[in-house]
Length: 374
Figure 1 (tube, rainbow, N blue to C red):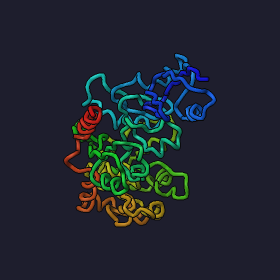
Figure 2 (figure 1 turned 90 degrees about the vertical axis):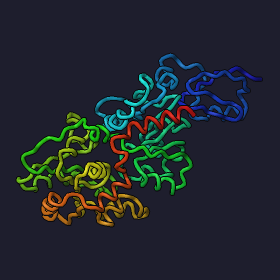
Figure 3 (figure 1 turned 180 degrees about the horizontal axis):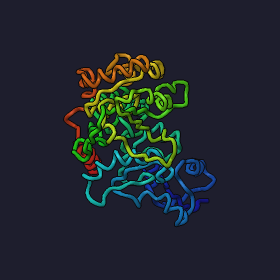
Figure 4 (figure 1 turned 180 degrees about the vertical axis):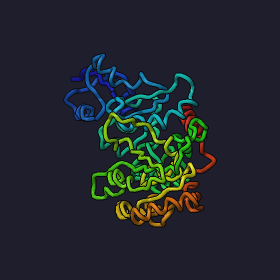
């Protein structure tokens, strides 16, 4: 005997099971035999809620109440102590400026229309967030090559925004079936557009900007926490500043702003892996790498992917590479004198081409509107 059953799709994309399709954020009434195998399949399908949800429950989960273009935090809450909230905002704000007024905004969860999400499918699955759907677009939360962008990590995304041709090529070589859009790196738009003014310093300004710490056996990919003490060994003839990664702040009370001002002010940057080294090069800053802390672990971690950009930087010695702290101090003078070399300039041009700098927000917004119109 068949019964009428209400089924609510709490996900932000249609769910199809056998002959049934459930629109996102809607309650669908179906007639079905509740002892059938088909009913059991429906009951076991993630995202389907049986019965009428309460208004409070719908308020928390309904994706149809969000924007045309959702900039998705993918965080448990929007509290300011979440380190990646500010990262997402720094990437998304330059895009919002070029989307129709009122059509876009930040959401904690994806919506039923178009979502720009800043974490890979692998990361989303691992952390139990809303799964990737057909109306989701990928943009990595950083420019560094930590293998977040590889095809196997973003297969469910039908569109991917990348910084430049190096990333496009790496994704396509992995067999990615979606469309890749080369849009540039939105986070640096405000700098290239003159919204930041370089501050003057009485001495050469050296910024040590480590990536976040790691907790696996290749934790040496970051110079944190050693940099906390090593920076004090740099002579007083230089002004130094430690620009910490948001997730490595010593306390949640410390400011978690992005380090654009520090990078713009810097005469020399000390970096290890991750976004900061690419940002520094894009801004024309010479970068020194503390090889004695990081090289072995970077090469070991990416040993199976020798096209990884950070593997190449250490393996091919692109940039200034220090063998110990004494050597690093000597290299500061060399970097101040000689600046970026042609190899670094050529390398960053493939990662983030000059022609896209300052235009990334507009290009990403245009791409989103094009995808939405299809």
